[in-house]
Structure formats: structure tokens, C-alpha cells
Amino acid sequence: MVISSLADSLVRGVETVGDRVSETLFEPVIRLGVTGLARSGKTVFITSLVANLLDRGRMTGLVAQQEGRINAAYLQPQPDDTVPRFDFESHLSDLTGPEPHWPDSTRAVSELRLSFKARPAGLLSGLQGPRKIHLDIVDYPGEWLLDLALLEKSYEEWSHETLARIEKRPQAAEFLAQAKAVDLAAPHEEPAAQALAGLFTTYLNAAREAGFYDCTPGRFILPGDLAGSPVLTFAPLPVSGPSRRRTLQREMERRYEAYKSQVVKPFFRDHFARIDRQVVLVDALGAIHKGPQAVEDMRRAMADILSAFRPGRNAWLSQMLLGKRVERILFAATKADHLHHLQHPRLTAIMEALTREARDRAKFAGAETAALSLAALRATTEEMRSHDGVELPCVRGTLLESGKKAAFYPGDLPEDPAHLLTPARNGAEGWLGEDYGFMAFAPAKLTLRPGDGPPHIRLDRATQFLIGDRL
Image (cartoon, rainbow, N blue to C red; front, top):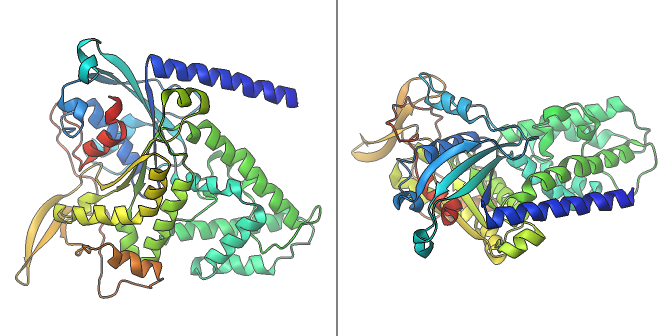
């Protein structure tokens, strides 16, 4: 078995090097990972990105488009036959049809390949004709990314950290009561394990609804075809010291290790480790609306997410021989269209402050990072409204719940992000003297001109940062 395993690893290594030589010397491939936590808008981002790269009339911030070097862009079959295709056509129809609505959220890994024919820039432009460049977009849930941190923790370490973190959360009360009452040395019985795992899963879903972002293991929330399997039937328990055979504690430990080896490691090997550009989408406005605790939890999640990356520069030789490293990471605050453009610089500053620790780590490792605010699909229009003699910058759109048109003023975001981050770090229960509103808007009905993709805010700038240097 050892020889077979070594041979399999050697064959994989040879195939991988061959693929990288082909990609590097002939048809470059950019693998762009798109992730984010709940309700950050990953599906809408990818759909609008692809639509605007196919019809580039609104992509004025993309330098290759400005210079007229992109001859064509077209969809091709993806290279990974075992990964579901991102359903671009259905999602675009959801957003741009006669009755537009938001598409379903990301629940598993999916992929899409967009290929360009583009002329090189600079001195090479006169010596070479158009070349083919492939953009492989990989969509995956952010909750799965947070699971990578489990690889370095034992069951006992994970249990202690999780129980301490959720101790004061009301959503965890029922699970904690059951976990503290369980006899860890009792013989393993499947109904008891299922009951504990069920209560823990209920807590994770309730915590995510309440605005918490540290909801791992991620497959408990998005199980896919693993629903009901033993690999998802464990929970953190107040363990101390080694376990005895055939006890509940030993079985929980075994299943936790199985989750790491059979679920987390394959995801890292097959998908995540091959990414060389990454965008992390963040619903910062939603967290601000939910309060200081949600903002602090988001900041920690951003730091944890970056710890999963292997940032650095992709020199062509090291890329072929040592594997890819994420060389550009963009942290993007989504739903910027929920604010008047006068407040966009403040939202960007808050995003930069939230991700400061994460971005500093990436820069130290040699990766380029950026933070900005964007709206992949603009759902509102802007207007100024007079109230008590003061002109307020508002946005107008169709409310998601009622379908009625409404103008909305969410409140002024602070100029100094510390006014949000300091109370969040200090554990404040609410914002002192401030109330930041948040309204959910439905997508607007669109009439697109030939050659134009869906309307957006700064999607072209995000694209330029992520892949502009390769076009």
C-alpha cells in the first residue's frame, strides 16, 4: 500500500508539472477563487463578472478593454469534468428576466471557464498576434474555507476553543446544556451521537442567522451529499485527556479526524491549493446593521480566512515545481449600491480597517492585496431628499419583501473606522448614539444595450486588480 501510494503521488506530480509547463508556456490559465461568508453575494458577483466580460461596454476600468486589446471573450467547457458547472445562464436569466430575482446562494463548489483572445501589451504587441488566455472561476462557500484551520487542531483543542467561544451565546444554550450533561465515558450509542450533532447543527444555523461568522465545521451548514453521514455526526464536548475504546468520546474523536481527512483535505488538495487569484466578498453593511459583536466576529473571520491561504508571488519556475501560491487577494465590501456614492469612501475605509491584519500578513508573504466597496449588480438609484432642512443622500429601489418602491437613508457611516472597530473589540452591546439601517432591495428591471453587461459599481476596478496584469 505504501508503494502504491508513493507511485500514485509520483504520477500526480508528473501530470501536474506537465500541466503547469503547458499553462505557463502556451495558453496561460488564471484560476480565480471566489468566496465569502453567508449572504455576501458570490453568485451575483460571478454572474455579473462573466456577463460584463462577455459584453464589456461597462468595463472601462479594465485596461486591456480601454486599449482595445481584447478581441473576443467566450465560454468554454471547464477543464474539471468532476466539478459541477456554475450555472451562469440560469443565474443571468434570474437577474435580467422580466421578473428579476436574486438567484439561490452558493451551496457547493462549482466552476466556469471563460477564455479570451487578447493582444499582449507593450513591445510584444507588435511582434505577436492575439494569444489565448483562460480564466477558470471557482466558486466555493466561505464556510468551507474556514474549515482549513481545523487541520492543525486536535479534537480536544477544537472542542475547548469552540465551547469557550459559544459559552455566552443564547443560540447555543440548548446544545451546551446537553453537552455538559453527557457521560463521555459511556459506551457509544448512535442515537446519543445523532442528538448531540443535531443540536450543534441547529446552533450553527441559528448563529449564522444571528450574524456570527465562525460557524464551523462548514459542512454541517452546507452538507450536500454528506447529509446524515457519520462524518457529520460529531460535536464539541468538554473532553479532558485520552479516551477509552468504544466510548462516546473516542467515537467523536474518530469522526472529527475523519472529517479532516475525508472532507477538508480533499477540498484543499483538489480545489483550494490550485488557486492563484482570490476575491473574498464581505457583507460589511449587514454586519454593521447587526451590531458591534457581528463586526468583531467578521474581523476575526477575515483573519482566519487569510490564514488558510498560501500567499506569495507565482514565479514561473516555482509555479511549475512547487505548486501555486495565491499572489493577489481582493477583499470587497459588497452591496455598495445600498449607500449613496458620497458614503462609498467610508465603506471602503471600514473594509480596509476590518481586513488590516489579514492584508498585512499577505503583504509580508509577498502577495498583493486590496480592499474596496462594490456592487456586482446595481439595484438602486441615488437621490437627495430634504429632511428638517437637511439634504440627506438616499438610495431608491424596490423593497425585497413588499415589492414597493422606496427611498432609504441608512445613516452616516463614520469617517474614522475606529468609531466602529473600537466598540466592537471592546464587546459593546450596541452602537452608542447611532443606528445604522439596512434595507434589502430586489434586483431592478433592466434594459441592456447591445455590448453592455449588467450595471455595477467598481466591478471593472476589481477585475483589473485581479486579472488585469495577465490580459
